[in-house]
Image (tube, rainbow, N blue to C red; front, side):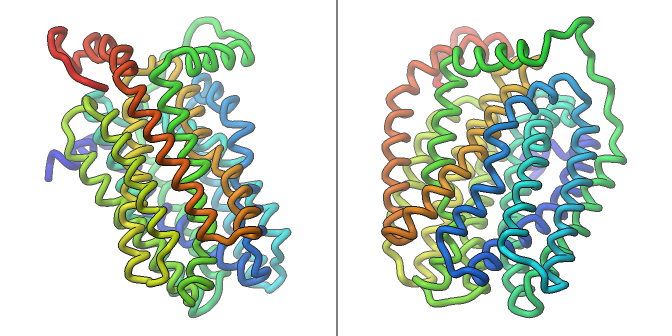
Length: 421
């Protein structure tokens, strides 16, 4: 057990883990409530896609610039500000919903606001992990625990959200989320963070951005990892946007059914995090990415044909595990190979690949589902994911040759050992 949780030995990370665990449950309660509210008000698959697009498109545009700021500014301070603003955004949703004034237009506008906040929060959060964990050997475990925290909340949050929606409506879900941010804000304020050394002279923002872009697209392992993550984010992850359609039209259920489906994916993802947390080395994660991408693709294909709740939940276990393993393994490799002065910018592009591509996928999925139905939309996306996984498998040996010298230089591999990335 100590091996699975060794990153919690670091005080700052332990504080973050506790506060974020509470806050993320509230976040997932709100996600379920937002989807259900939009679908209840409109009955439109297209507007589900538009809502998802509105909440995520700012990440695609702003995250690269936010990554430069995460390398320039105090990441801890950035996170305190973004968490306070996120709490206010959820409070606004709660006030509008509880007063009965909320419309889809309000939801979309506030989704854009949250997307703007996330554009700065996510790169800073990803880059901040290394500041909370002093021993670099514990970094892979910290990343795995981050994923376990995220996915444990994905199990608990949707179930709670479904029950609250059925009992008292969506407004109280938003109110609970607003209160939950207090936990993570307190955890951040209680941390003791040593000052990060700053270079004596800074380049201009656009010059630093070009440096980051050049590194991301010029170094094959980083480029291929991000492309693989972006493909799954665009074609695979939008299945979550269409969950209300499967819950109501395909499985003939209600908000509780939606919560169960989201919980199924969360349980699978949590199982995947236990595997990653138990690993003692970053070596071999390239193979994990290939297997995970194939697994989620096959599971999504089968899910698209399912009309039984139990079978759908079972298949979503593998979807959730595949999604988590693919993205978290890529995150771990990136955090291991990148130089510290580029960390914020690289993790900004990772955030774009994971979340910034989702608005495009959500919008396309909403349009396609409106035309050809949600099951066929999921099926097409799954096939594309499998093709992407096949391409990454073909490229993996070449990527391993690029990564190996970095692993040797950082003491992860001895010079004579042969392995894969």
